[in-house]
Structure formats: C-alpha cells, structure tokens
Amino acid sequence: MKEFQRKNVVSKFTIIRLLTAGERFEILVDPNYALKFRQGEVKDYNKAIAFDEIYSDANKGIRASDEKLKKHLKSNNLQESLKIILEKGELLLTTQQRKQKIEEKRKNIVSTIARNYVDPKTNIPHPPQRIEQALQQARISIDPVKNVDEQVKIIIDELRKIIPMKSEGSILKINTPSQFAPQSIGIIKSFGEIQSEEWQTDGSLITKVYLSAGSRITLLNRLNSLTKGNISAEEIN
Image (cartoon, rainbow, N blue to C red; front, side, top):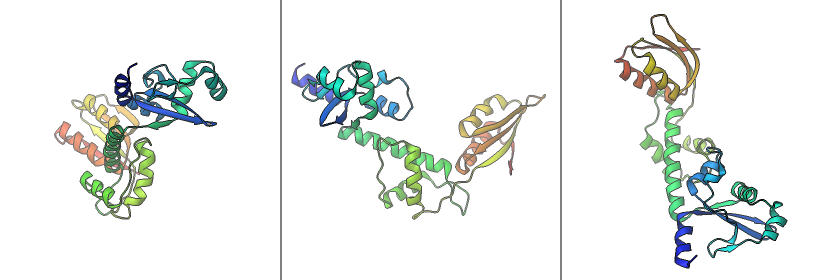
C-alpha cells in the first residue's frame, strides 16, 4: 500500500495497541464499534475490526511475525488474536475522534443526571444548562472511553459541591383511559421499570412503574400531553 493511502486508512480508523513483554501488537478498528464492543453494547467483535491484520507498527504497515504472535498471545488463530488485542489493548483515539467522543459522552452524562437527579428543595430536575455550568465550574474531565454510568457516580460527588442534588426513586400507579392505553404503555416503559401491568375490561390500563425522580416529571408531562390530562397517578409507598 502506498504511503499516502496508508495515512488515509490510519486516519479513518483507530489503532488499538497491546504491549506485552516489550513487544507491540497493533490492529486497526472502527472507533465507534470498538468502543461499543468494549462497553458491552455489541457482541460481534468483527464489526469493530477494520482489517484482519496484526501489526508491530500500523502507521508504517509493518506486520507482526507469526512467531511473536504465537509466543506472546499464546494463539495460532488470527481471529482469536485479533479479539485478544481488541479486548485488552489500549484504544488510541485521534485528536478529532477524542474530541467527538468527549462531546458525545458529555451530552449523555448531562442527560443522565437531568433524568435521575433533582433539586431537593423543589424536587424538580436541574436544567441541562445548569448541569453543564456545574461541570465547567468543577473542572470535571470527561473520559471518552469509560461508560456513562461509571462516570456519573464519580461526577455527582463533585457536582454536589456546587449544586444540591438528590436521587429518589418511587413507584407510581398510573391509570390510563382505554383510547390512550396502547400508546401510553410504550411511553411508560421508556421512562421506568414496569412493576405490574393490568388491562381492565373496559380497555383502560393500570400500570405500576418504578421511576427516578427526574424521569417521573418528564413521564407525567408526556402522558398528560398524550391524554389531554385524562390520566390519574398516585405514588405508592
């Protein structure tokens, strides 16, 4: 492969590097699928692998020898070796990829916090803009690789130094009229964990759902909009 072509390929994909006993093994991967695979979001590792090649230096196109692969990865199978490197190696994002992933993670983190935490004084979620400001004030660094839930657990402790926050789940019993019941169940499932679902003889639906404090307000707003306010909801202790 010509040098300019190789640069285009390496810039399009991402290198995963595994260092073992002083030897370097690198593979080229799709950064999106590699992250999803590492985070358990996809099971098929082949979607992450760009080429069925293992390099000692991917930028120069120098392939790793079969002898070194067998010695250090303990495998004669190429696919098995690719998977080992994908699972255990270091994901080397380009500057642009890293910037993009950090921005995506930041938005997901803000959204997760807004859904699951509220101001204890009002029991209303903080606006996303306020959470963004608090992240900046706390000088919190977003990791482009770690999953959102893992980062939120750490970030919340820092944000609480700036804005008051609490997370309180509750079970809500919702009664939806028959004409809106089929549409409402999908909405309810997207916001919480269904505890029970009882369809009445008149076609109406009684649902018990576990919700975070932030999700509760958003769900009720969606259901009231759907039913023109024709739902009843009560909290169950």
